[in-house]
Image 1 (cartoon, rainbow, N blue to C red):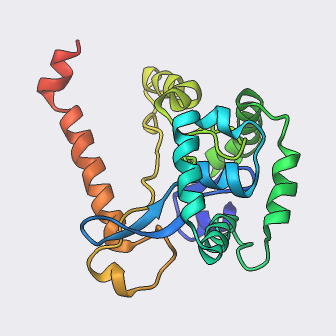
Image 2: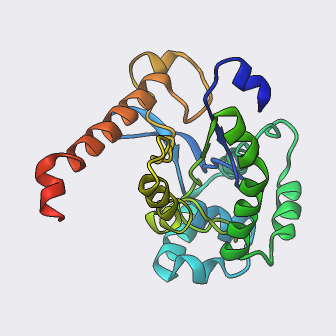
Length: 235
């Protein structure tokens, strides 16, 4: 952390996702406007490829039936491509990780709950935040992909309720004591490949123009919610 600080970097975004990170089942799904983006179809993968325990109950009967129909219509090469896409979500291991490896790592987290994983996150922050504060740096947690339990893994930083449990009370505490860094950062993530992104052949889900568009949408929403007419209405 000291080296990025010396280089003038003020914010570090970190991951806290066990086994699989920003995993998708399709890395270049074409939207109706022609823009490729990443897509979730974990019911199909969890139920029919990895044979996850309790997957049918987790997704529900209607989703399970739709997944079964899609799986039956797939060619063998499509099923292999689906598996390869999921394995691609293991950061730094896409070239060597296999489905057997993924299953073994998932088994290590069979007994972990969302509450226990959240406590692990808090323990991690308790260790690193004192140094970050001494250096004047801020940490920003990467939002969990996807925003729902996936392959039996709990998600602890995906929803409004997750963020309320971890950071919104801390924001109020900081604001009350007059801290300049009361507004805890979050990062926008992923986007559609548009314009110059289409020829860049960059990391799936990380287009330059598409992410800037997403950031612009987020900023416009924040500006609207902070408008005086909105804040008055909620007093």
